[in-house]
Image 1 (cartoon, rainbow, N blue to C red):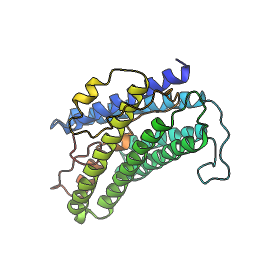
Image 2 (cartoon, rainbow, N blue to C red):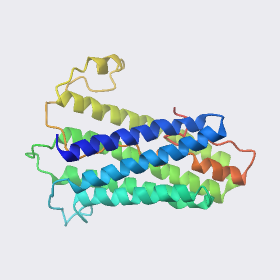
Image 3 (cartoon, one colour):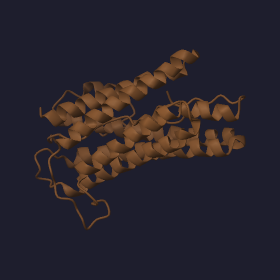
Length: 269
């Protein structure tokens, strides 16, 4: 296993840990909820740093300068996404004392996810099929997950901004975003599960446990052909999908409104 792969695995672990810890913000204990938000931001910061180091070790591939997505190499696009993500975390911390900082924070997360999504599309369109560490089916499945996750981050940024500027319509805005979040969240889970299914199958791992959790045949029954796994992709859980900071801001505009944010800006988990 290369150093980039090890760093990617560690980054994914910290992203997931931050995602899990952030779920504690549902607790009725204010102190514990606040600590969970801070802890999740800390874990996400470590994940972004590890992702940055891994990105520096990615192999160099010529960019598609003639295409809109080829404005730079996809490894550099990952680095840009990391920098935007770290800036978003800094904005989240600043929002603890300056609540309005949550607006640039959510849009920075959305921008970070957008660049990450573009980089994955760039990789899909640019890398040769003969590349030993490249799999078309895996990259396509991962790209679908990236697109859905990016859409969720924009939904979060939009509803947070609208709630702050139009507090009187907060209930309507959050109701709509919650319904949309359920749909996008379900798609994200499906695409991520499909990606994991294909990756495990390509690694030659027994998939019987996947069949046990797939009684409705949502995933393809045909195992994909064994293909080498990509060595430089990060299946992460963007922090914008697991922050409660918009809650405190909206509460400052309407003391009678109780809002809780989940990974999909809705009560999915």
